[in-house]
Image (cartoon, rainbow, N blue to C red; front, side):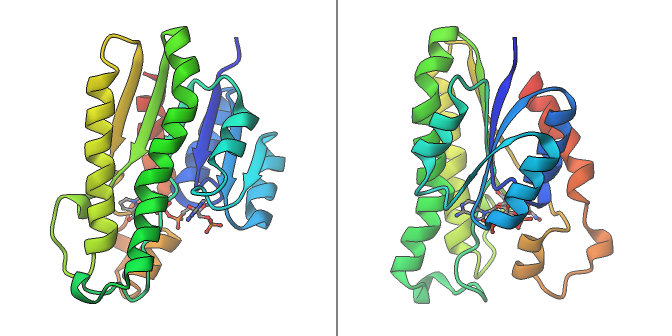
Amino acid sequence: MTTTAIITGASQGLGRAVARLLAARGVRLVLNARRPEPLFALARELGAIAVPGDVSEVAEEIAAAAGDTDILINNASELGPLPMPLLENYPWPELLRVFKVNVIAPIHLAQLVLPRMKARGAGVILNIISDAGINAYPGWGGYGASKAALEHASRTLAAELEGTGVRVVAVDPGDMDTEMHRLAIPDADVSQLAQPESVAPKIVELAAA
Ligand SMILES: NC(=O)c1ccc[n+]([C@@H]2O[C@H](COP(=O)([O-])OP(=O)(O)OC[C@H]3O[C@@H](n4cnc5c(N)ncnc54)[C@H](OP(=O)(O)O)[C@@H]3O)[C@@H](O)[C@H]2O)c1
């Protein structure tokens, strides 16, 4: 039987590396990101379905395109305004947006795929979190608090789904040389950062376990 996976934020970085590995295993993929060109290019390369758009606005379209979903990887994420403001000065519409993309959308997607996962007694929801959700880095409060919330939502969902056969996993991929990292810390020494392609096999292992 064909395995189906949804990956949000799939057009580059970690999402793209995971998509390539899952495609090589014959997994049917539904990929999402906002910028259409790189998303459609990857979908063509992998024979995948592309659903372009902001994940906080197209969750229903993503779930409908996937149908019966075995693996949901909530990977899309936003840093918020750059340079990242202190919480004291954080424009609240931007703060709402960061939470909508990084926390609410992943929960919404989980809600959409869960009924069929539960009916089959199998499925994996994998949420990508960050050490910024644990450590208090000044300026990282919006993004960090959203990742902390996603981690807690993952724990709660996992507890609620115990015994159903559906697993919920939250994974911190660690520092990687990606656009997000370059935007957050432009002067970082990239030679010290992992490539997303070296992190992706661990994510796939967790999804497939
Ligand atoms: N890089 C690190 O050091 C690091 C460390 C810890 C955790 N993480 C986490 O790892 C995950 C992957 O990040 P990455 O480093 O691979 O970043 P990346 O290379 O910048 O990729 C981010 C992906 O998400 C998409 N995206 C962003 N906002 C979106 C939205 N609102 N709706 C749909 N797609 C959206 C981007 O495409 P578009 O811009 O076209 O939408 C892109 O495909 C994120 O959850 C991040 O928080 C990264």
